[in-house]
Amino acid sequence: MEQGYLTLETGEVFEGVLIGAKKDSLGEVVFNTSMTGYQEIITDPSYAGQIITFCYPIIGNYGINALDDESITLALSGVVIGDLCETPSHYQSIHKFSEKLKQAGVPGIAGIDTRLLVKTIRSRGTVKGYLSDTKKSNFSASEMQTTWVEKVSTKKTQFFRNRGPHIVLIDFGYKKSILNALLEENCAVTIVPYNTPFEKIKVMNPDGILLSNGPGDPMELKKWFPEIKKITQAFPSLGICLGHQLIALAYGAKTTKLAYGHRGGNHPVRELNTGKVKITAQNHGYVVVDESIDENIFDVTYRNVNDRSIEGLKHQSYPIQTVQFHPEAHPGPSDTEYILKDFVKKLASLGETAYAVK
Image 1: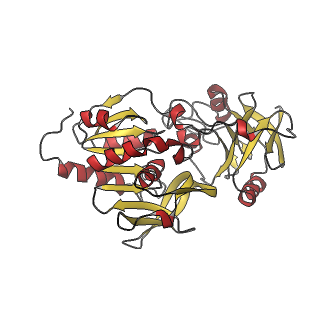
Image 2: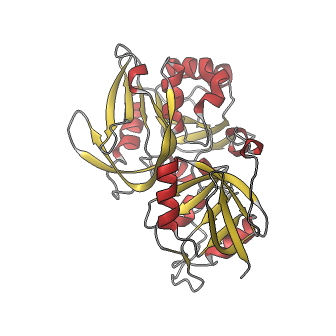
Image 3: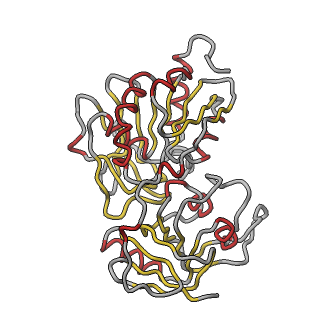
């Protein structure tokens, strides 16, 4: 295997062996603490433009299957791992981890001291990194693209027929698991591009709206905040991850960037009205600022146990709720799946007549 290097913009260099596609890559270096689910992670559109460091020491041991991709194409910029397993063992495995990266055109590096890298990120804050076969004495992080939603969002409207409530899924970079969870609840689902205006959605006559997860800084979508506000005032709405942030921003709140984000399947979140703690899956670098929430508009419903950041909101007048975590991801394994189920039940109870879309 060819020798490779991950150079951070702060000057640290990590040496390993290159895997996947043979090309240089620039990205924001982040880390994920999940023990399993590497296939779902590398195919999650929310990682667009990022180089993912896996904290778990061995990656690839159960291979890659044909079922668990969260998107058709990979949007991430690179992968950093400790030990690479090239002899996977699982009855559903059809590819090695390294083969998946190569087929998708994504570079990676193995043999890295990922504990040291994660400690560096935690002390430095999230930094840009350059993945290459040579050490980089300097590179321009300003060359990196910052607007990723347009890249990962669908370009055309897609419809999935079903007999239950009709939900418009606004695609900022949705995970397939969200669509599957809605279809399992018998929802008819229309997936629309992120920039679909209120008037077009109104014509679709949905029973509810779901604003999806997605990559990047939510403020990059500032021009769409008025449309998001109109949409959520007109239809019962649920925001997940980036969707949570966008709804908060549309109603006047602010967001800020975390030092190194929340990424993994083991984040504890407290449900405030019951005091119960849920184990959640998360993948975000931004949070809603506590002091920016208007207490006359939103109630905070969930908080992160570790840093007390806002993990959920509920509008006091409109049927709008949001969660920063992923209720469809089953990390608990089913601690928060009730959020999607309750949302769909609420829509079904509101629809006393036959649903408009069949």
